[in-house]
Length: 395
Image 1: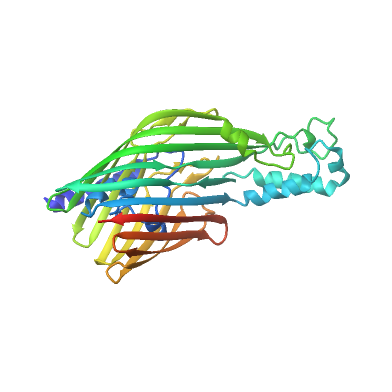
Image 2: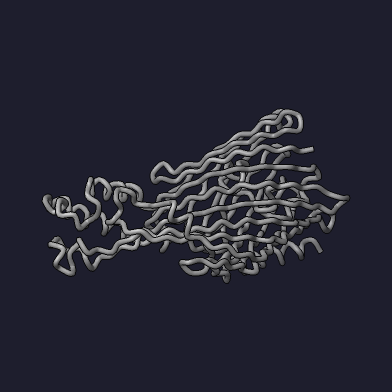
């Protein structure tokens, strides 16, 4: 019976991998320093309260009660966007906008501005920032495991919309003059606040674990457009961005499973927002379409975990023209009965050919029942980085 279930589970993973093509406002973000330190390879590892996000089936893996408060901050700068915007500000100098005649006193400066606009027009150019934080509490009654959580995942994406029709080096009286250029920065944001009730339990002699989250989501969306070339030395006006918002509510449903074909091997599959909740926005509705992720973990002995994850869905990003689908690898090693833990990993966005590997590392220590964890990740070629810390009590 167990072997048959293993075959069915493997076929299910393969089918999902082959046929799911949904997109979403953002892909899986790395929530919590344990997961970040392991390069986001956490779907089959998750056994603390953050399993609510990573794989609710993992709530049934550990019998300890867990109260956890993770906070993270991340930023992605695709194709050097911030450098280009800074260069535009330098070129404009004291001028209020591109129509200022002082700009045309130096034709080389205008030529450089046109070159920057061409660079900014490339697909996937933009900046994203996100800051997940939450409170997760899990417990159990016999083999029934429960969790309640309040989770916030604000995310902002800024994308240039470049006007390449009006880039002539000519006076403003010419309709095609760069003085009449309408290039913009488009900012989109969503802040889904999730209030979840979770349930998980082991089945089949603790070889199969299942779990689910039912979530009430309050989604606040933001939208703002601003001309790149009429900036008054301020490319992005965040005050106007935060003022232009809408709030709506929805219901979300997540499910997850973990299967142990052998004692030291775990295979996990999780699907978030399988009912595709949607939230209104002044820039068009933002959907949280289904996100599916599969992972494996090998535990040669209790204090060592080696894991790999892959997104089975290719997700849209708040950066226009950008896609997100990640693969991650990582390991976690505990010392002195888990008094100290060290972690290392890496992940890559395989949906984009020019993406780089992001390397991660982290550590944790405990004093009696109190656990502190921290981790960071950085792309040494592009401007992408993330830091995360958490404080937890396990008893």
